[in-house]
Length: 70
Image 1 (cartoon, rainbow, N blue to C red):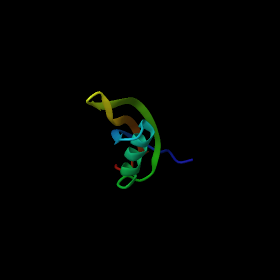
Image 2: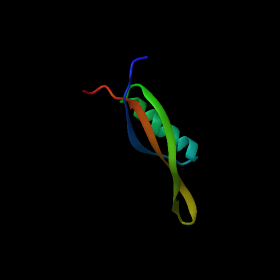
Image 3: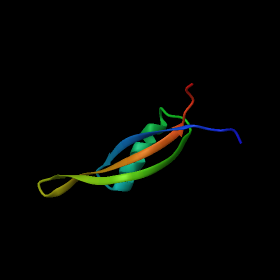
């Protein structure tokens, strides 16, 4: 098996519905510009509040993709 190197970046996704959808939104957007996404890890979740109600959910992720630079 050939050796591979992966780069890890942090993303924050948002959703008005759930943390799961917030994480999925971040991955979906990243997949449009990054190739070979390898794995993802949800590191933190929080929410934005307004007038005592949840306005949106946020998920912070670490996502890896295959590094092709020299």
